[in-house]
Length: 262
Image 1: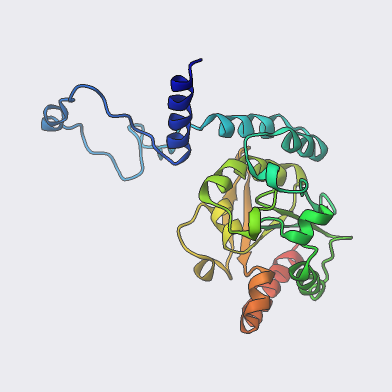
Image 2 (image 1 turned 45 degrees about the horizontal axis):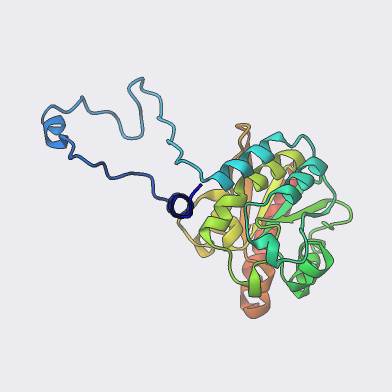
């Protein structure tokens, strides 16, 4: 392939990754003529059959297709870890020390999903082991949960972003198939979404964590199963804003009440 063709292919892949989903055709289309005889109106959000129409997915870039295929093909947590280690579609793996997969007990009733590894997590290969992880352990211990007994922990991104920067929307979308498959394989009863990045990724919501926290939200997995998820403040935010610990405590009590219902 020529250098020019390679450049054009790379430019197209970048546009798709950034959300471009429509091409400009070389000839004008008779849209006004089509608009002159519109079809019968449908109810909002419903198709011709009366059922709610499914959202049409945008075309995935090659890396996104690879991630989705690897995630779907993993039949166990270990297989998922190996698939993520083989995935070469993100440059984050080149700047991180190692893959950070999970910690805690698989099959635990509660699965915590955070943002991305920090410096300590990147060094040790486990999520939430720095100062924010120590606070997380104390928070969940206050309602009888511990990562060595009945808690399972992971992140949206398995690799540390350079400089601990916030993950981009493209990075979140790229790793989302792995996260959803991780939830399916870990099979918790309830999800806790720690921070705005995790809430945005799993809930596909426009609202920020301030509006999302404190109540349960549905998360639909690729299998069709619907999980209940509770967004709450990330421990790193609580370290910077101690006054928010009261709200985090209210979220933990909400989680404890739900667990006690059996």
